Length: 186
Ligand SMILES: [Zn+2]
Image (tube, rainbow, N blue to C red; front, side, top):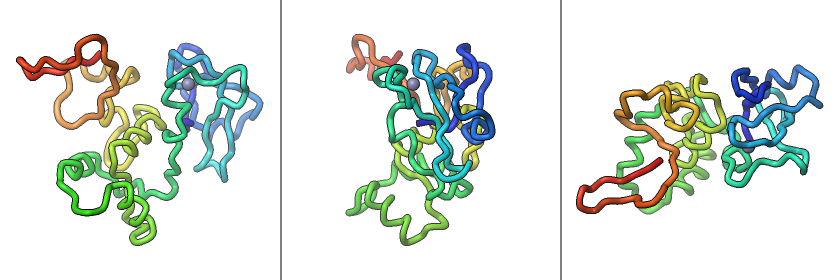
């Protein structure tokens, strides 16, 4: 699921689900994944903040492995305090060794204990948010495109990637050279 889609096949005319709610709900939109031919329709959820796009027609489903078909991309952000999110701090926290509880149980528990300060914290959650929103969308203190390098944002990084970044990639052939300590991703 995604909260954005495109009006045109070239993926130039972006539309948010909240905007699509205002239009004809029978209208179909294009998946943010340019390789995917699914037809997406807006679903209301429970008000415009929860609106999202879904491939409801069986003849026009998402292709296999499309990140927008995955329900994990549609995690409910209304339960999460977006304003308190700091990408830099969230990534740094991932490098700190945690005691006893797994990050997943932290996530569940903290939503009860400390609702106001609850932000996303795992790689999976951050990745979900990055795929759910368009690159220029500001989430917490950072633009989506500054958190993830994927085929939407690769052109933002002509000189390469410096600092923390989630990189979406594939493996073609050899992934690791143990002599050079290098990994190879496409
Ligand atoms: Zn798709």
